[in-house]
Length: 256
Ligand code: PEP
Image (cartoon, rainbow, N blue to C red; front, top):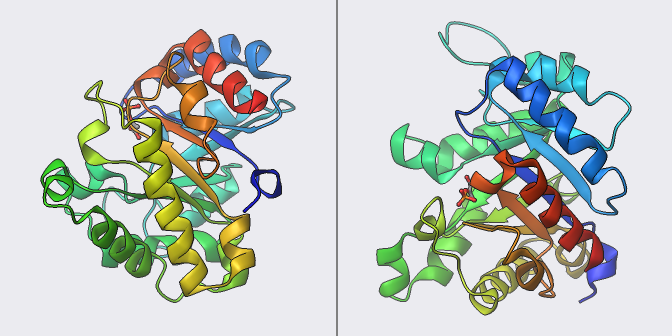
């Protein structure tokens, strides 16, 4: 497997943080700090910040992503946002199946799969989050859990469509807890995910797909994590809200 056949992506997941004016200010700080990145740089921001974020990053190397989307094109889904709405304002990425959506908002692999297919059909790039609970790791079923999520979340996604899919391995016990998976743990599961993609699709699909690590990644541990062969960047929560920390992670990915 070769790391140089796929692009590392550092994506911030801002969660429910920053108003539109705060988003503009944070992006203005980030733009000069990440302008020479050789990895892809993405900021996934709350819905109401999206238009301001797209405008603020015009002509820069920062791409904008949403944190979720609905699968229907339109209709009676009060409070939801469609892929067409995101596309029209210039959004390129969308985080899907984040563990906080699974944990607090009833997201299932079935609904993740519907959202992934809708996002791809609209020309958005889904960042599909998978990962085990602490209890599942302790029961030694991480491999089954993650392989099952991959199979279900990508059900009926063609190999051609897969080229626009990013996978984020996010062990649930490491998200927002300050507990990071060791670089070896991250590498082991990212390699398992790549092996699952190889079985489901092909060796070329497995080599080409970007698999990020996410879970308390920061400016201090990023270098070791993204240095691993199967870790192609990261999905960053807390540290993506501080411009110089986020930029340090982007630099780590650019140098690896
Ligand atoms: C996330 O929200 O996807 C995440 C990885 O958060 P944190 O970096 O804060 O653990």
